[in-house]
Amino acid sequence: MAVSEMKESPFILNGDDRKTVGQTIQRHCEIRKWQLFALSVRTNHVHVVVTAPGYEPLTISHQFKAWCSRKLKSTQKNRQRFWTEGASRRFLNNTNQLESAVKYVLEAQDRRH
Image 1 (cartoon, rainbow, N blue to C red):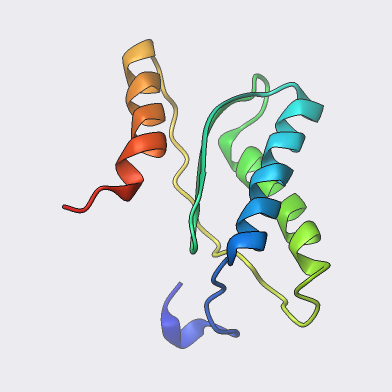
Image 2 (image 1 turned 30 degrees about the vertical axis):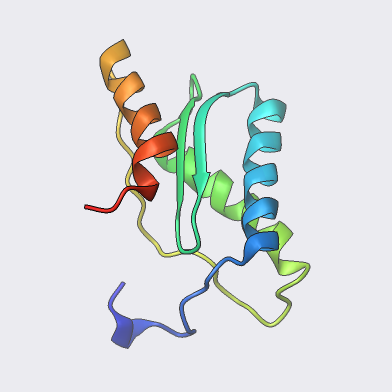
């Protein structure tokens, strides 16, 4: 979304928000019996590697965003939006791709190029 189209300032997740988002995604995976391979909650975005048989990637990201928004709303009452419209959703078709994605999420996020 272009900055000129934004209706609110960007949402930056503080430490408590990051914990809430992480716990919410973990719990949602437990309830749905989705396998969570990797999770990294950053200050302005989230990376998740998950398998969810029978669900489209768009549905998965919408569910994560919806549940996390509900939880964040309890402390951010005046906030209307927490996430952008888009998300990267790609299929990992083999073990090498899965391992690479997990490594990226768990290790590469904090590297400086």
